[in-house]
Length: 253
Length: 53
Image 1 (spheres, rainbow over the protein chains, first blue to last red):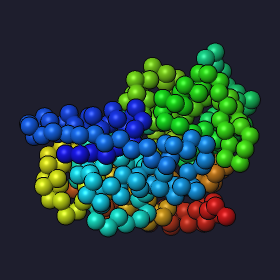
Image 2: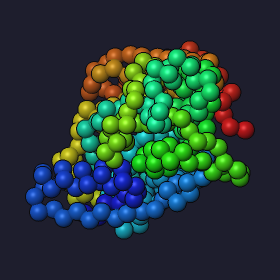
Image 3: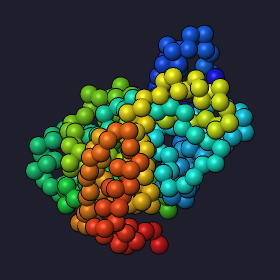
């Protein structure tokens, strides 16, 4: 089974997990992981909207390869899949059991969580590219400065640690950041869970639709692949994905 | 299962939340109920105001 994925450390870890689970339930299956450098990976400066949002930036190229019969399946973080558009010819064949879905705060060296919370954000910069995280951060820390920040999970932490500036799409740069808001599951996948300084309760910061869920997409007509993927599908995660998708389409779409 | 969803503007000042529970074998109905509750509370107005120009 040829499975396409982004080439980031987190995406590869997720795809290797799929391969492990498939091998456990379908002994003898051979999984080939095919790495893609998506538009969102190669362009580490721009906002994602010009690339078609997260779907255009991280998902479309791999989907196209499935539709062109170059892959049997595609691995996506469910939160990167656009919920407000139909995808003729494709279905989600499996969702893996959900990882902890929450968001966390990662701080630069020398900054304590107590100092950060006491400040209400005044004098500090949080790096994120997510509109949702930026809005919640302003709600929780009214005096915070939000700066545009791009890159895979491990890349963002490295930039924080090295006090690197983030290039801006129109020229110039911002930063360095004092803190990042990131997905707990992403940090865990790349072995950086020890960097979590604070976990936002979901009552303070709701995660994105599908956050913490890995989805495996395949061609709707490829019944052999669908049957194989169904062996690793987690019904509870699938139900979470369905409920959130419908709420997203109706309430926010 | 339970589902909580929210809509907020970029400043975080305008905030609407809806939360409901329902049977786990009917997730789409639960999602629909939460989505409609958000709309009833004024979500569409916040979304329209926040839409990129």
